Image (cartoon, rainbow, N blue to C red; front, side):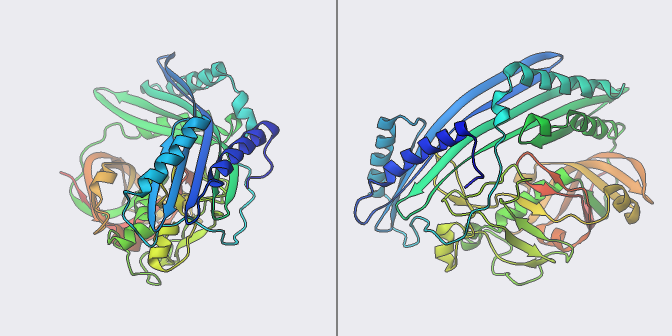
Length: 458
């Protein structure tokens, strides 16, 4: 459970809880039934040249119903909480059971005795912020970004976005949970120019209420990243130490996390299969998936099957501690779920990381770079998801950044490719920064220095 919700949210949670409970109460003998329901509102404002280019406000609600009988699973969903549509979803899920292939690992999660963390994830005041105030935030973000440096020629986009929602889940196996949360963020992308050269840079700030957002910091990061790339050239092909900025580290962590899911391991789609207990990374790396950490926007007291969230260690001093599991992958693997089921109301539970975080080091990013002498600070990568082979771990992605010689800036570079393997990259980490940053997707990551990486340039 969340900590005690304010009256309005508590009423919504109670309504959703009653709805899903009424569905699972209809389970027939020999049948397991699960129902998940959610409702919420979201806003997105995009400012451009002092005007509102786009404003979207939406209210959504829906229900998903899963039925398991004789090892066969059926699922159906509805984009409404209307009783007749909920009834149709249950009937359709039952009908779909007949066409499903049997799998002895199919079945709903059952209570495992783990107590849910008491998380305060809802800021009810976010729901009271007017559309006009949200528009003003996007416009102010753009204004700040354009006024920080004379070389800023414009803003490609300045966005404010938020969501406030509640959900509930119940199963005929005895799980009944409900909760509410709020998230918001701002992100800005600027265009810097000098002569005929132009470069872009982006910055963001995340939180659970408007008061958490730092517009100056988001704009400042975007401006700094764009300006320092002016005059970028293509570097010579070489091998050097690369320093991934936090947002880039977070992107790589997402790929690594996906290879540590039980389903990927079972299907032979992970380069880390059958390596629990082995040292697969630098001893500097401690990686956890911890949706009980309220600092992550992905925090949640329960997973997508209703089990209590918990802190799952993945790497400890570089040693692989285990894999992430939902109920299905755990049963197939002969182990217990790690409460790592991820899903929405329109899908059945998958398995994967929920709130990855890499433990930061003790050295600030400037000191880290200075200590390395020659290196490349990678500020952006392109084509990461298409450029990584998640089975072999091989990757080759486009990048840009700033070269350093003897700890001093030696010019921005672009149109280069960095190539290695996930396994080699993790083993070759030589330093971890103290600059942990939480990303809008919920991942927490600091700067990461990796030795002897191949750069392909001119």
